[in-house]
Image (cartoon, rainbow, N blue to C red; front, side):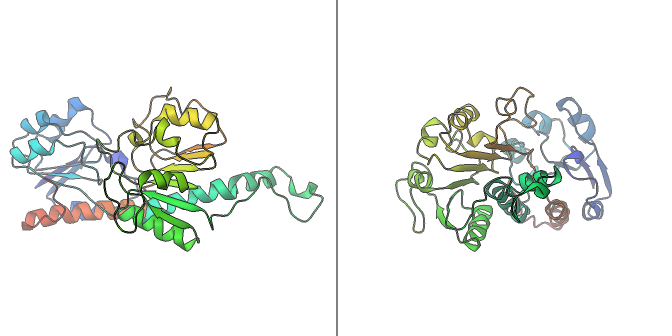
Length: 317
């Protein structure tokens, strides 16, 4: 069987692809693939591997040899699942590979925010300590996570992992019910109550019609002025303009974002134009520890092997 990876550059160069190479007869890859090049590059392939390249119904219709689409991610919105099913093409994803990586990111950024680690180091590198009149020198105030209320919005594997680590820091953890839910499940609190009580709101929801624009002027208005929002889920969960307004007006204390609505974003994105002490942005890296990326590729190789054996466990279509 022939496999082609259409956007290999989404994975670090030092990650081993042996699990995929051993599962197929021929493996080729391209750093990235524009829409115009997908069909040409995949026309002889039995298997397409894609991270973010969109596999539309039109593309599937032009690839009669195609049997399997492997998504090197958890989200499946870049593949037309209905068209794949109608064409007899199976689709699989990889779930759970990034839980540890995202959890580590959440607390690395929260510790940076409250401990001001980089500020402390930079100040000493600038020569501040020898000039101190006492034995210590604080470049910025330090705040503790212990005792703070952490609201988890989206309680899948990652949300549960973040909650567990929050408890290890002696934080009070709230699990939010879905917005608009009629009933509140045991162990959860109403969405509005979670936002109102939280010192930190951590988003882990999938993007659905119900969660699109979940954090907006109205929901931000429920939050404490001292609250910090962190989003490692999907950029579309947050209304960027409303968030910017809230940060400028100090309606909330801060925001940590690893995702934006479009990725890569345009250079003139409203949040990228700012230089604000209460806004920290990274480029969708929370998922991507070296170990997580290796798990992702190894599981993709296993998916291909399982497909050949007739028992594909991570099938989504």
